[in-house]
Amino acid sequence: SHETYYQTSNSNVHRGAHYLSREATAQYEKARDAIANLVNSHSRNEIVFTSGATEAINLVASTYGRANIQSGDEIIISELEHHSNIVPWQILAEEKGAILRFVPVDPTNGCLDMKAFQSLLNPNTKIVSLQHVSNVLGCINPIHDIVQLTRSSASKDCKILLDACQSVPHMKVNVQQLGVDFLAASGHKMCGPTGIGFLWGKEDILNSMPPYMGGGEMIDEVYTTHSTFAKAPARFEAGTPAIAQSVGLGAAIQYLNDIGGMERIEKYEHELADYLLRRMTEVEGIQVLGPPVGTPRGATVSFVCDKVHASDLGTFLDMEGVAIRAGHHCCQPLHRSLGYSHSARASLYFYNTKEEIDRFIEVLEDTIKFLGGIGTSDLDDDDEDDFVPFI
Image 1 (tube, helix red, strand yellow):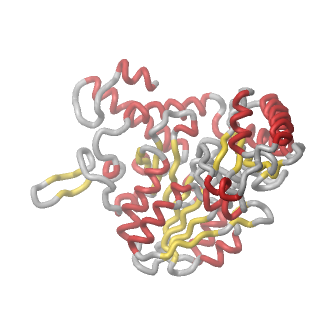
Image 2 (cartoon, rainbow, N blue to C red):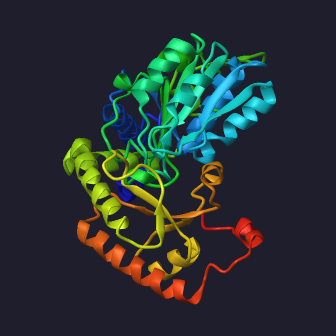
Image 3 (cartoon, rainbow, N blue to C red):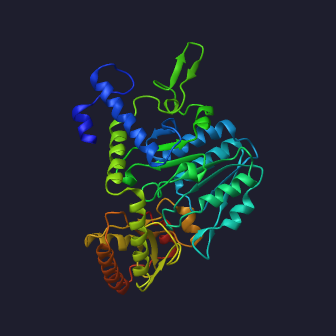
């Protein structure tokens, strides 16, 4: 679809009356409809195209946050968060004199500490921004409970943002049932192109927010003295958008639907995740991070090995055709809270099989046995702290 767009419909959107422009606009807006249907949005106007989840979170922090957060207000995030759901709130808190509070990890189950979360909520809490599924621990946060507690204990104006990068591609997500105010997701994690993602937000909230960027297509009227702005989503899509990438994301969503839909994908991935976790508990010399066997979790398993550095594991497994990730996975605060500087991570998607998991375990065990015998982890503490991984 990405290539076809450039070959048959390459034109700007929402501008021309000629055929190519009309066709490009139709494909672009069809992709918006696909996203709206995927997350069960109230309206297609609640879907804003962004370059990814990072921009979506920054958009909310820079528009809603700057317009509504004041000195002394509190923002709650957690130690589990990806840096893209930490840094924007740090910048906002520093700029506004707000207080940024972190929910810790519960060491007993490798999940969000819900008692600590409840204790942090108070009438000064104006924003809660949390992951749906941890990209390191794989734990699935209890969003229904989080929303209920927030609505009952935080400020009546408190807004809830959900980082759904690790949930939208892997399970059925229904924004109407979740009850949050914003949701951010990225396209490349769900078979789409890079450089595209989306922000879902309640339409009335989006229309109350100031623009993120100024330029063409986001305006209503422009005068020499002032400008007025279009309603969402156009208000937040200034300039020429990532048209081909948006069309590609729409095609990826159609593909996910064609192979059985998100419920089928979720069921299969839970089966894979359980199998992977059980197999990994058989491997000697590693510590698996996150919820234990039998706890529902995403199909991502991070682990550390006392005898072998994560980057060495990643390099040697790659030589055997097995791709894992090594580093802090853009989650340095989480790793510090767990007592590590980095970890290795095996991630599964619907195209993986149990046979591939078995092959991974076989290569992992052989690699640990080989590298452990030659002492690749004989590094001093300073070297460990200075390690710069593939993040």
